[in-house]
Image (cartoon, rainbow, N blue to C red):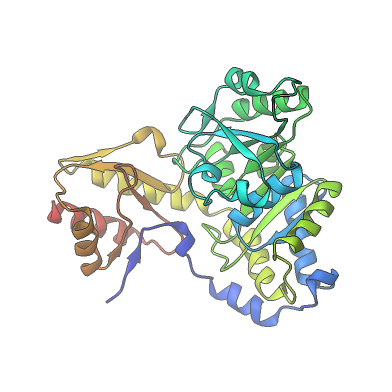
Length: 339
């Protein structure tokens, strides 16, 4: 049976062009700085985001935690949204790896009120930890894209108090597409940025951490500390180069597929679509009438559709490069039949 996978855009497989590039890739020992393909990917990434340097890393979570470790000292406090990926889906790693505590701001679909952020910055007091970092996320895992104005306000607060700002930009290029701006415009409001190559861009492995040269040099050593030093990594970096060259400009197609799916699902009685969170390639909805979520997921599996069960009462369906229009229509039909 042929399956269509709506669980995430992390399930994307590399294109044939990527596979060919990986086969032909020139390689060296990247820990020694000798891999020409990795060097090319890092230069391209820094240039696209308008920053000085970049570092190839194994994953998005690795990149966020590497940034936290590099920006802060043990015992610092990090300010970030209460539903962001670092808080919700990174296994409490900040307390284990960097030894910091997280102080969350109530964030409506990712939007952090600048006044609340500034209020949480610690004053000098023997009883208080130091505020070492502010983290933002764009696009947000809620499906929302933050405005440049909101990011600018947070960034200016960081500058005012001499606190660095890190951007979890796992889907940075989705955000840029949705806002119709260059990725560098988003990146201009952060001191460091992590973005993934292995989600909608279809590369099989890897993310990038981008920032100024001094930060990236510190991060390079911390990458080794965290076990992220890779040797002949050019084999996978080659796919990342193709991802940046060929996959960025087409992300709007995934967004359109998600909106088409939302339109079809909205026609079904009992399905409530969160229309305000349709900025990128994700559809969030509540579905009434399902008595057993596990059985619902299993029945869709039998029909050739892979989906995740609900999180906090919401189903999420994600489109990607490998999601044809007929799969979108067929998924909506299967859900209607099951209900």
